[in-house]
Length: 181
Image (cartoon, rainbow, N blue to C red):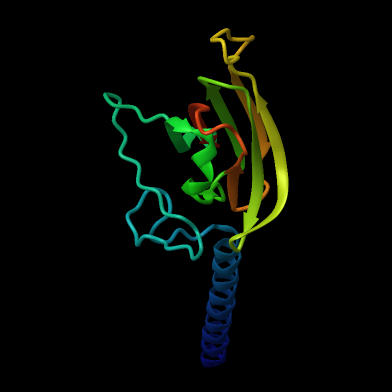
């Protein structure tokens, strides 16, 4: 009888040990499912750099001594300028490329007779239309000047190139500038 009790006692121990191991494994799996796993690169640890496709790369050196101020596409550039030019010779300057800008400002300063300046849109070397006719007041033949002798016009860029033309007196001179933004 003693041997039977000993065998039953040993089988109960093995059965209880087996149930304990299954319960411990289940508890471990449950805890592992709810605890986040951290991998290299997270939580401040050093890992590999990530290269994301089709995104620009920007290098920034932080220095409080020399801050860099970045201004978007609001910068203005001088696209074209001629000073003390005969308005009748403007066509010889050819086509002026303004395709890089969204907006342009044409400034004309007249130093002599009144002129009408024709601004044309050019594509593939051919004038496709007249954008504007700019009438610039000037001085009369006797040397008396009437009002302001400069004119400014602002345009959304109509195409890639523009061309100036006029049938002004060859003695009519002045300054012309195009600013692009």
